[in-house]
Image 1 (cartoon, rainbow, N blue to C red):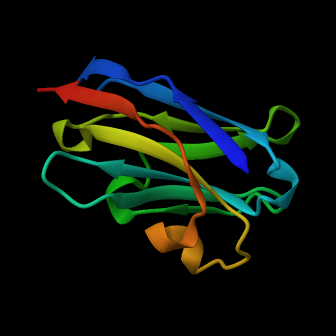
Image 2 (cartoon, helix red, strand yellow):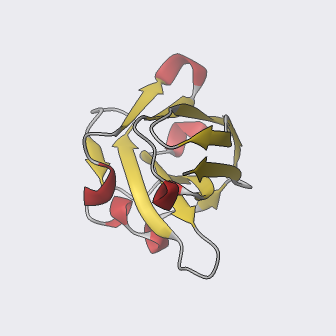
Length: 126
């Protein structure tokens, strides 16, 4: 089992920044990648970004490219999502996820992940 704990959400004005953190514990040695997803009220949970633990390869949805940056600290088993130039449409609950499935295709999909955090609210006011 892998436990994931997100932090760093909050309320910010449009154009502002937030940094989300996701600390992983448990059987993290099997983890291949970590991802961030978000879910706005009344909408499906959608992929935001992912990073491969070993290679450091990163993936982003088009809407956040150039504004969000995912990174990892292998020693701390922690993944970060730096979010800049935030927009009201970024408002959502952000979830961290972990997967042991070695697929660069599945890391951008919900079904590719085995473990999920509880989520942290990000609200961007206009």
